[in-house]
Image 1 (tube, rainbow, N blue to C red):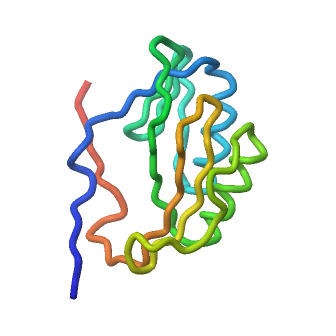
Image 2 (cartoon, rainbow, N blue to C red):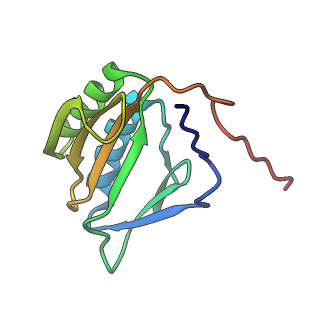
Length: 136
């Protein structure tokens, strides 16, 4: 049975508020790099595709963020980078029973959010990403 999911149309953005932007920058730059996601430092906040991170109240805690990984090696690199950059183990890389081919790792960020990298089998993609452009 073929399963079909749509991605890239549900969220415009997700914004999390953290205690220490420097610590979060270290963490998110480290864990997103092996996933091929660039983090932009915009001074008072960080931007990574649809994710924004800034200092502020109330703190975002207990959130679960799951990032797509291209393969199992990227899941392992994400996990090791997370532990080396101030994250805490929340689930070593390995298969999960959620659906066929689900392979993931979990690390808690400096504020206790559950950050996951997942290789979700080997789906056929219609595009690598959705590109949106605006005229200035």
